[in-house]
Length: 402
View 1 (cartoon, one colour):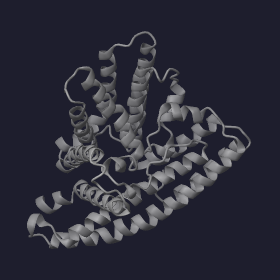
View 2 (cartoon, helix red, strand yellow):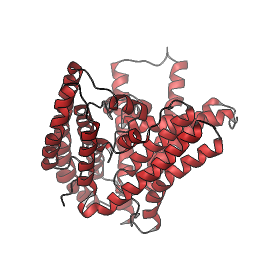
View 3 (cartoon, helix red, strand yellow):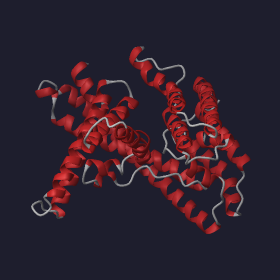
View 4 (cartoon, one colour):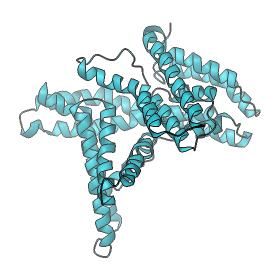
């Protein structure tokens, strides 16, 4: 049986083009065939999780049925009651599979969990936010079949972007007029071509040709202070650029395919390297993930701390929550010291950033703001981010412990 990584080779794109053509013709004439969308979703899911990855496919089916049972059960319960302990229990149950998948390699000497599959993180985010929005009352019309389409929407299943149930449902239940849809197709095709440039040309050069050489040079240059060297610096910039172009390319493929299907999946990147500070960076980098953490962890922790008067100062509340939020993000990437250090680094950076912005606000007249200071701020932010990505890459673990 054929098996493909999503957007991994030209054959996948050829199959994608053939499969999407009937759907495009239908949308141009104002019709959306949910049956056909379901069939092509199943087809591409089989391509992704079939063949040698059949165990992942089984895990996916069991996992989705489990999350459907939780979300549907809570939606029924929420119509009658709104108990806090029940809500917290459902959220914990929803994240248990992901927690097991993330913790297993740390306790089993790197061996993956049997219940793991590509994309489990992003599906968990979708399920948890559905439960939370049901609890808030903002999601009142939960439907099992729509939720299944939302969870198994194949263009974004492996690595996002992370859509919201209500936004997806709106697009899924409507058909754009011909003029709007032609504009969506134009954007979608452009996104896919830019994705080719990013992922298969730039990221290929950086990740396949350049970085192995820099890694070898860095290993041979060990012996100085903390084993730092010029090749380590080069690796830092190359790895950061490769991460951006590889993931941004994938995201453009996912968004472009979604647009062609008449679904306006949100963008994941918005010129992040032009960010003048670390908070603005997180508003531009992996946007759907950072906004998910902001809305469903950071803001809820802030409200909880304020409601229970845990801290007297709103500033202390925000600072503690920044660090907790980013530590959770670090743990989400994996239970390793460098992922956790990466999360702590960004949590502390956000605290320092807010302190600096408060200071600037109080001393506007004495602190210049012009193209030079703006350029320096962008340069400083970019380099801090690249250093954090070097930490994230695990190179220090390789240099120091191997």
